[in-house]
Length: 205
Image (cartoon, rainbow, N blue to C red):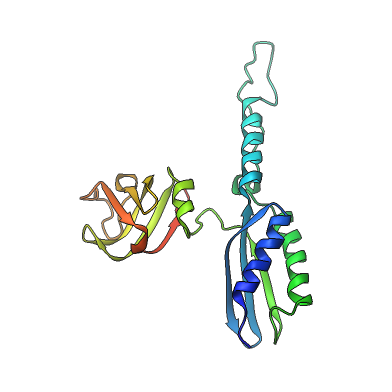
């Protein structure tokens, strides 16, 4: 039987909202006895704003000082990785429990058994919708286009602008594919969203 992916997505969105989460991406892979429903979740906008405020407060107050002169000032609490990514293992587990229950009760995935996998989108998350290009301005991204732009289809650069229909990459921030050790001939490139085949963030250490 064909899966009702729109219904599954709508259900996932509803369950996610009850946990202050958002669905980033949902995909169904495999066949026969090896089927997997993969769901990538993150904190919703309200929860992310609350976490950002809490992190800013933590970073503004040292947890300890050495001596009366305050020589230990600047020793800050270590920010958990799950806080930086906006999602925790507990968030994933709670969502998976409730979502999995609804999937089974409503028989939204009929047939053989399947595996439900829930995780954060990760540091190198895909850029899937226009809002992502606005939200992640200042981040390093890798982009592949359908048709060449400035004689190239592969770009790595920093997102520096977005006007709703196209974004600008600063290519001086990274070396281009196939041109290791050389500065890109074009420093800035504007790419239309309609020309994006795939795009994702690049983790910076």
